[in-house]
Image (tube, rainbow, N blue to C red; front, side, top):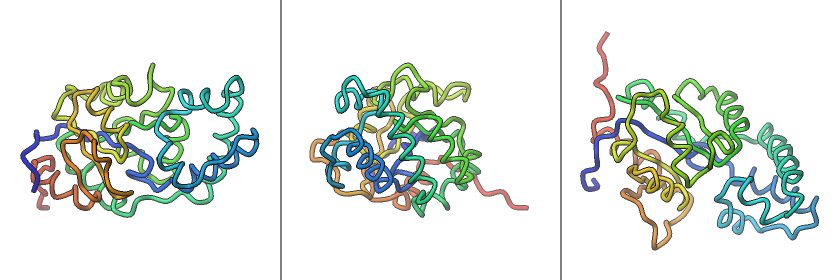
Length: 226
């Protein structure tokens, strides 16, 4: 069991490859987009290493003056692949109802996926009911790792931003976002070992490993006996 962390008052999750398995979808959509704009495509491993920022921040560096057009093309291709191959991280299907149903505070999502696409995926999975807010790229004035989307994700919840809010994700940009927001930073290493210089308060291999830590830190209300 890790060193004692603050008792969480809210859980804020990354979306892609934390709760749903999308590396393949992202890679296919990027590959389609690169080829359409005569840009050398990345390998799958390069995609996993390079995809961090939102499209509005990363695409101008990749596509220059055609970035807006490329974002629209990429979004269409991603939706194409998502409609056919979207799948959840298996543990999330069991744990989200538990954490949402018995948690002492809200669950929210902060993602660098476009907000409209994020919320569409949550609705298709039937998960939108578990979250106070699902905040994606372009919803706030800035995207991850800015504090702005975290503030928006907690808006109206009554939860004060601070270390009692646990930010849970699978990339270094998630941990940077947690630090910028003053949250407890929880890294899910299911997709590979963490970087040597990762700044996180807790590193676990999976959501399954995280679950007893959340329970030990008193986030869950006692089960009610009927």
